[in-house]
Length: 185
Image 1: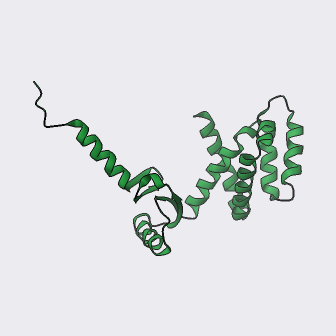
Image 2: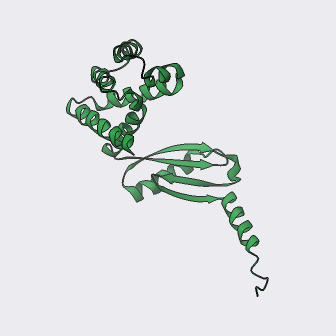
Image 3: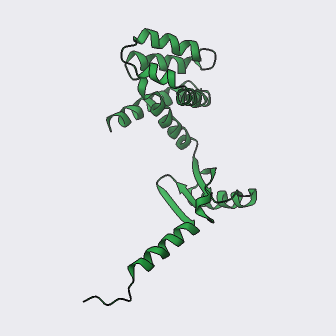
Protein backbone atom coordinates (compact mmCIF):
# COMPACT_ATOMS: atom_id res chain seq x y z
CA UNK A 1 0.00 0.00 0.00
CA UNK A 2 2.81 2.39 0.88
CA UNK A 3 4.48 1.84 -2.50
CA UNK A 4 1.24 2.58 -4.35
CA UNK A 5 0.73 5.88 -2.55
CA UNK A 6 4.36 6.80 -3.07
CA UNK A 7 4.21 5.93 -6.77
CA UNK A 8 1.03 7.97 -7.24
CA UNK A 9 2.62 11.01 -5.60
CA UNK A 10 5.72 10.86 -7.76
CA UNK A 11 3.64 10.20 -10.89
CA UNK A 12 1.36 13.14 -10.10
CA UNK A 13 4.34 15.42 -9.53
CA UNK A 14 5.87 14.41 -12.87
CA UNK A 15 2.50 14.76 -14.57
CA UNK A 16 1.92 18.28 -13.21
CA UNK A 17 5.43 19.34 -14.19
CA UNK A 18 5.00 17.91 -17.70
CA UNK A 19 1.77 19.89 -18.14
CA UNK A 20 3.43 23.03 -16.81
CA UNK A 21 6.38 22.64 -19.21
CA UNK A 22 4.03 21.65 -22.08
CA UNK A 23 5.85 18.37 -22.73
CA UNK A 24 3.12 15.98 -21.61
CA UNK A 25 3.08 13.81 -24.74
CA UNK A 26 6.88 13.54 -24.80
CA UNK A 27 7.02 12.51 -21.14
CA UNK A 28 4.27 9.93 -21.71
CA UNK A 29 6.30 8.43 -24.55
CA UNK A 30 9.35 8.47 -22.26
CA UNK A 31 7.52 6.62 -19.48
CA UNK A 32 6.30 4.00 -21.97
CA UNK A 33 9.87 3.51 -23.22
CA UNK A 34 11.24 3.20 -19.68
CA UNK A 35 8.55 0.65 -18.81
CA UNK A 36 9.33 -1.46 -21.88
CA UNK A 37 13.10 -1.35 -21.33
CA UNK A 38 12.81 -2.15 -17.63
CA UNK A 39 10.39 -5.02 -18.19
CA UNK A 40 12.46 -6.57 -20.98
CA UNK A 41 15.90 -6.18 -19.43
CA UNK A 42 16.39 -8.40 -16.39
CA UNK A 43 19.96 -7.21 -15.73
CA UNK A 44 18.84 -3.58 -15.58
CA UNK A 45 16.05 -4.44 -13.14
CA UNK A 46 18.51 -6.34 -10.94
CA UNK A 47 20.95 -3.42 -11.02
CA UNK A 48 18.27 -0.89 -10.11
CA UNK A 49 16.92 -2.96 -7.20
CA UNK A 50 20.35 -3.89 -5.82
CA UNK A 51 21.01 -1.87 -2.64
CA UNK A 52 24.77 -2.53 -2.87
CA UNK A 53 25.16 -0.58 -6.13
CA UNK A 54 25.77 3.10 -5.31
CA UNK A 55 23.28 5.67 -6.61
CA UNK A 56 25.98 7.41 -8.68
CA UNK A 57 26.55 4.18 -10.62
CA UNK A 58 22.81 3.72 -11.17
CA UNK A 59 22.50 7.31 -12.45
CA UNK A 60 25.39 6.76 -14.84
CA UNK A 61 23.88 3.55 -16.22
CA UNK A 62 20.44 5.14 -16.66
CA UNK A 63 21.95 8.18 -18.38
CA UNK A 64 23.94 6.03 -20.79
CA UNK A 65 20.92 3.93 -21.66
CA UNK A 66 18.33 6.69 -21.99
CA UNK A 67 20.26 9.91 -22.72
CA UNK A 68 19.55 9.86 -26.46
CA UNK A 69 15.93 8.76 -26.04
CA UNK A 70 14.37 10.68 -23.14
CA UNK A 71 13.49 14.34 -22.67
CA UNK A 72 15.48 16.42 -20.20
CA UNK A 73 12.53 16.45 -17.78
CA UNK A 74 12.32 12.65 -17.77
CA UNK A 75 16.08 12.29 -17.28
CA UNK A 76 16.04 14.77 -14.40
CA UNK A 77 13.10 12.91 -12.87
CA UNK A 78 15.03 9.61 -13.10
CA UNK A 79 17.98 11.25 -11.36
CA UNK A 80 15.71 12.44 -8.55
CA UNK A 81 14.18 8.98 -8.14
CA UNK A 82 17.62 7.39 -7.88
CA UNK A 83 18.89 10.07 -5.50
CA UNK A 84 15.86 9.52 -3.23
CA UNK A 85 16.24 5.73 -3.38
CA UNK A 86 12.98 5.19 -5.29
CA UNK A 87 14.46 3.60 -8.42
CA UNK A 88 12.74 0.27 -7.79
CA UNK A 89 9.38 2.04 -8.18
CA UNK A 90 10.07 3.40 -11.69
CA UNK A 91 7.71 0.99 -13.45
CA UNK A 92 4.89 1.58 -10.97
CA UNK A 93 5.34 5.35 -11.23
CA UNK A 94 5.26 5.10 -15.03
CA UNK A 95 2.03 3.08 -14.84
CA UNK A 96 0.32 5.68 -12.68
CA UNK A 97 1.62 8.45 -14.92
CA UNK A 98 -0.11 6.68 -17.81
CA UNK A 99 -3.35 6.54 -15.82
CA UNK A 100 -3.16 10.29 -15.08
CA UNK A 101 -2.47 10.93 -18.77
CA UNK A 102 -5.48 8.93 -19.94
CA UNK A 103 -7.73 10.65 -17.42
CA UNK A 104 -6.45 14.08 -18.47
CA UNK A 105 -7.04 13.34 -22.16
CA UNK A 106 -10.48 11.80 -21.41
CA UNK A 107 -9.47 8.43 -22.82
CA UNK A 108 -10.79 5.11 -21.54
CA UNK A 109 -9.06 1.85 -22.39
CA UNK A 110 -11.49 -1.02 -22.88
CA UNK A 111 -10.13 -4.57 -22.87
CA UNK A 112 -12.07 -6.79 -25.26
CA UNK A 113 -11.36 -10.51 -25.05
CA UNK A 114 -12.92 -12.81 -27.64
CA UNK A 115 -12.48 -16.38 -28.83
CA UNK A 116 -11.81 -15.26 -32.42
CA UNK A 117 -10.54 -12.00 -33.96
CA UNK A 118 -13.10 -9.19 -34.07
CA UNK A 119 -13.75 -7.29 -37.30
CA UNK A 120 -13.45 -3.50 -37.51
CA UNK A 121 -17.22 -2.96 -37.78
CA UNK A 122 -17.92 -4.66 -34.47
CA UNK A 123 -15.05 -2.80 -32.80
CA UNK A 124 -16.52 0.50 -34.02
CA UNK A 125 -19.92 -0.49 -32.66
CA UNK A 126 -18.44 -1.34 -29.24
CA UNK A 127 -16.44 1.90 -29.30
CA UNK A 128 -19.61 3.89 -29.99
CA UNK A 129 -21.58 2.22 -27.21
CA UNK A 130 -18.77 2.65 -24.68
CA UNK A 131 -18.30 6.30 -25.74
CA UNK A 132 -21.99 6.95 -25.05
CA UNK A 133 -21.73 5.33 -21.62
CA UNK A 134 -18.48 6.98 -20.50
CA UNK A 135 -18.35 10.22 -22.48
CA UNK A 136 -14.68 9.50 -23.13
CA UNK A 137 -12.68 8.61 -26.21
CA UNK A 138 -12.39 4.82 -26.30
CA UNK A 139 -9.30 2.77 -27.10
CA UNK A 140 -9.88 -0.95 -27.53
CA UNK A 141 -7.21 -3.36 -26.36
CA UNK A 142 -8.23 -6.59 -28.11
CA UNK A 143 -7.14 -10.04 -26.91
CA UNK A 144 -7.93 -13.52 -28.12
CA UNK A 145 -8.65 -16.31 -25.64
CA UNK A 146 -9.92 -19.50 -27.26
CA UNK A 147 -11.04 -20.87 -23.90
CA UNK A 148 -14.04 -18.50 -24.06
CA UNK A 149 -15.45 -20.76 -26.84
CA UNK A 150 -17.57 -17.84 -28.10
CA UNK A 151 -18.92 -14.48 -27.03
CA UNK A 152 -16.76 -11.86 -25.36
CA UNK A 153 -15.52 -10.36 -22.10
CA UNK A 154 -15.44 -6.56 -21.87
CA UNK A 155 -13.44 -4.81 -19.13
CA UNK A 156 -13.34 -1.12 -18.29
CA UNK A 157 -11.55 -0.07 -15.11
CA UNK A 158 -13.08 -2.23 -12.36
CA UNK A 159 -16.13 -3.26 -14.38
CA UNK A 160 -16.39 -6.51 -16.32
CA UNK A 161 -19.16 -7.73 -18.60
CA UNK A 162 -18.80 -11.44 -19.35
CA UNK A 163 -20.95 -12.64 -22.25
CA UNK A 164 -18.86 -15.69 -23.07
CA UNK A 165 -20.13 -19.18 -23.77
CA UNK A 166 -17.68 -20.64 -21.27
CA UNK A 167 -19.35 -18.59 -18.50
CA UNK A 168 -22.78 -19.90 -19.52
CA UNK A 169 -21.47 -23.47 -19.49
CA UNK A 170 -19.91 -23.00 -16.04
CA UNK A 171 -23.14 -21.54 -14.69
CA UNK A 172 -25.17 -24.43 -16.12
CA UNK A 173 -22.68 -26.90 -14.68
CA UNK A 174 -22.98 -25.38 -11.21
CA UNK A 175 -26.80 -25.33 -11.49
CA UNK A 176 -26.85 -29.02 -12.34
CA UNK A 177 -24.45 -29.77 -9.49
CA UNK A 178 -26.94 -28.27 -7.01
CA UNK A 179 -29.50 -30.98 -7.90
CA UNK A 180 -32.61 -29.30 -6.56
CA UNK A 181 -34.76 -32.36 -7.24
CA UNK A 182 -33.50 -34.54 -4.37
CA UNK A 183 -35.57 -34.15 -1.23
CA UNK A 184 -33.62 -33.20 1.80
CA UNK A 185 -34.75 -34.57 5.17
